[in-house]
Amino acid sequence: MKTLKIPRIDIALFETIVDRIHHLNANGAEIAIDQINWKETFSKYLPVTVHVAHDNNCLYLFYQIRGEVLRTVNNKDFMPVWEDSCVEFFMQRPQEKTYRNFECNALGVLLAAKHENREKAEKFSLDEMASILRYTSIRHRYEEGKEVSDWTLYLEIPKQTMGFLPNEFLSGEKIKANFYKCGDQTEEPHFLSWNPINTPEPNFHVPSFFGLLEME
Image (cartoon, rainbow, N blue to C red; front, side, top):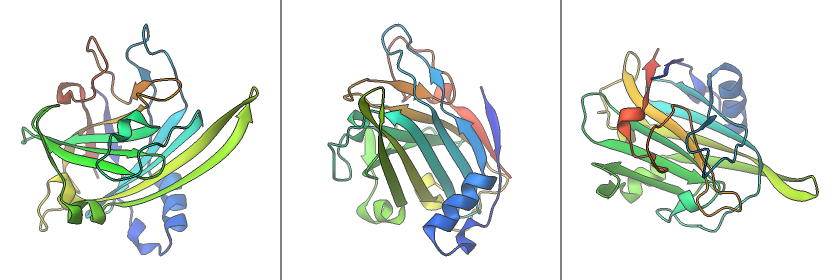
């Protein structure tokens, strides 16, 4: 199991999203989402990183993806964004049996829920969904005669949507988690993760294969 220290940075002091992204990209913990867990059937690899930090009240994520043949069909929250060009964050507080997933496609369309298992879940409320700030950018280019896209996703996830109470802080907490890149219905289906997964078929809903984030 991989372990990573997540720095505390006062990102909210920066007024604009662009400034927050620049600061997070320069000072956050960098994670490579580079594990190809099912190589025989899904061997596609994409360069994907996520920078992570917190400020006691929010977790900040900045994903960067290069060279993907883009798919962005789903355009409303709670739609099956995992079919599109998608990045995901799954987390679980160590004392909890449930876990939470935050899945976004390249348009910033979000699917988030509290899970008992892959099939049994309680979707976030509309207020909870609205509290999660999302910002995306997409740049199209050509690579070997084919149009591909470099895209980014910035997320601000309030601690309450991660299962913390208003009077709790993130500093000192340990969170089980994994980060993913997928695209089930893209031209080149792929299933990448930060922490490796050992299951017969693609499945991200496996807390037993989560890594550990230590909040400074």
